[in-house]
Structures are given as C-alpha cells and as structure tokens.
Image (cartoon, rainbow, N blue to C red; front, side):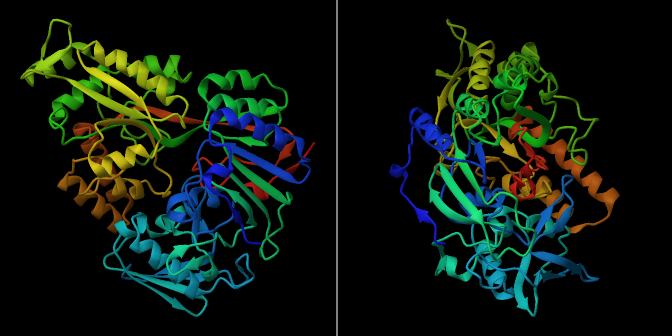
Length: 512
C-alpha cells in the first residue's frame, strides 16, 4: 500500500487541537491496534530526517542492530566477518528478506542506500569508508584504516535500507522498508499508521496495526496514558510520573539511559571563548537542587558528561562538576567583568547578557532553563530564555545566530557513543555538539579509538577523551536522563529499549 501523505495543515498542528484528535482515536476499536504516543515529530520521509520514527516503529531495518548493552546483533545482515587486516567487512544478508512492495532486499539495493547515506550529512560521512560494493548475497565495505566500531554505525537510523521504488533519483518519495510493519498512512508531522507486512520473513506480529502520535505537551501525553488512549506513552514528564504510578491500569517503567541534558555554548562568542567563563557558568549551576526539585531524581545530577550507567565512558576519578558561587565570581573578575549598579556584570561597557534557546518537546527543559536563569543571575549574568522549536538549535548553529541552548543529547543513536562524539566534537563541531570549538587532541583520540580493538587501550583513550571534555566544557553537562514510559497492563511481552532504537511492538501481545 502506498502511504497517503498529507501536508502539515491537514493535521491539528497546535497542542490545543490534540484532544479532539485523541477523542477521535479513542472512539475507534483498538482490538488489533497498538498505539504509541511520544513527543518527537515526523520531519519528512528521508531516513536522515525521520528515520528514528520509522525504525522505532519497525517499518525500516538497518544492516545491524544492538542489544540492550549496545553490543551488535543481526538485523538485515544475518552474519558478518572482518578480514585479518581489519579493512574489509563482509555482511551476509537474510536471504528471505523482502521489501514491503514484495521485491527482494538485494545487495544492490543495500549498497545504494549505504552509499547515499555516506554522501549525506550524517554518521557514515564521519568514518573512513573507502568503498561499498554488492556481491552475491551480501555487502562488502572497505575502510581506509581499521575502524572496529563500524557495526555500531550501521545500526543508526540514517542508514536504514529502503526499496528502489522508494526513490526518485536520490529523493525519498515513499517509505518502503523491510520490517514487520509497513506504512499505511502518514500525516506528517504528527501521525503515522502502520499495518502488518505480508512480506515480512519473521514471526507475524500479534498486533495487525500500530500507530504513532507526536504530542508535544507532557501533560497531554500523561492524560492519554491515564485515559487508555495509548498502549505505550514515552518520554513522560517527571512531574507526572508519581501520579501515573497510582493508576492501576498502567505499568510505569523508569530507567537510566545514555542521554544527558547539556548547555551548548557558542564558544566563538566573546562571552564564552575563554574556558574560565564556561567554568564560571558551570560553577553557578545548582545541579543537585534541580535534579531533586524539578526532575524528581536526585541521582540524575550530572557530575560529568557520561552517567555511571555508561560504564565504559564514565570516569569515576574525574573531579566532579559542582556548585561554587565564590569561585565562579573569582573567574569572572579575572576576565575583567565587574558588577554594575544593578549587580549585573559589565565589561568594557557591555553587559554579560545572552539568550538561551530551549524547547518544550522535552517538557522538563523550559523549567530547568528558568531555574538556571535565576542561578546565573546570582553571579551577575543576565540570561534570557527563548522556548522555540527544537529545529532552531541546529539552524542557529549553522547560521551562527545561536548563543546558547539547553538540550538533551542521546549517546546511543549510534550504539557506540563514539558515533555521537565524532558528530559533535570533530574539527567542525556539530549541530548538537560543540560550536566554534575544536580540540586536535580530542580529534586524534577519537580517530585512534575507532582504529584500535585492544580493550585496555580503548579504555585509556575513552578516559582521556572524557577528561578533555570535562576540562574544556565546550558543552556543560546539567543532568543525566531517566526514561519514563507508561505501558498498559493489557499488554504483555513488551520490553522498553534503553537505547531507544525500537519500540519493540512486534514482540508484544494482549494479555488482558
């Protein structure tokens, strides 16, 4: 079935309009429908833009995937080998895999999609791939130098494999994947409806249909969970979790995940180009207070970039990020800032004033930003808060208008965090990472980390990379992340993916 794709105006674009859509959805029989509600909108058909939705809803597949610990597992590739010189990878495809239009998942189709992904801005463009070639029953990928994390990069949603019929030239015109579900209807940016694919080569899903709804307001999502209007509601706001725990129809699952809330700074700005200014801002933050009062999770206060749950990257010996207003003021005075009559800092006639952008897709972010605004004012910094569309953060990075942003960064979109670090902290920085900051030492460490397979050497390299980020603070960690998900107790067999790669609907069933 070809997806019906309607323009944005065809759906209810405002939060105020959502309850009507929800009532309509709830009025429909849901005996064979599994409904997912989360915050992230569908930004288009291309895997590089919205592949996370189509992958999580099990419409598209990648060559590899990852287990809960981040280790590679088969997906479209059922097995792979690496040559002795560690430069040539061979991936054997599932022989019975079919696209949703009934055509076979051929080596040529896979090679086209991977080469296309390599040409785009994304994870494959950051690694030393020399060539991708189709051979009978599989794919051969050659790298210019050893790169042992390749299987993790091939699990990223931007590398999803689509059928040849999905393309006009290189433009994606339809999402024709190979997963257990196919697109039945798409009403971007908010809604996706899927149905079982008759060409799926695995066990048929228990649910004949599944739907995805992007609801930006946290309270709206919580109300839908309470009202039985979804079987799975992801990204619950912290203030709603305890209330939902009291609902006998819901199973509330809270687990730490590899995601960190960060302040991204324009390090090319005269305000932030000296590391002492960045340290002063970090020292002004009351992480413990915000974690306890706003996030309802005292243990989530970030002492460094990576949480303890990311054991390979977390460095227990690092001096922890802390609050010290006196030290923050001392650093700012050393940079020439002096308090004016109103207590706000001035240097050469200009105030220490900037705007921080954040967004409400993550419902806790505006509240955190407001708290930080008050905390920075205690040391004389005037920070304004602008709640914008999340897309204005990468757009501001690219056009140079961004001063600062509060955001949440996922380190498991590539199951090896190296993938995110290469995107965010390479020589050019990254839309969701460093801005006008780079470190040749860090870049060299990341390159070396991609090449070595020795466990002890990799551990040492990760520790040194984490130390550079802690010392230089191109972004400032604020808090670690607990993923809160509501699952209907009518559903069994559903596990929550801590890496957020899949909603795992195909493995679930009714139990009540």
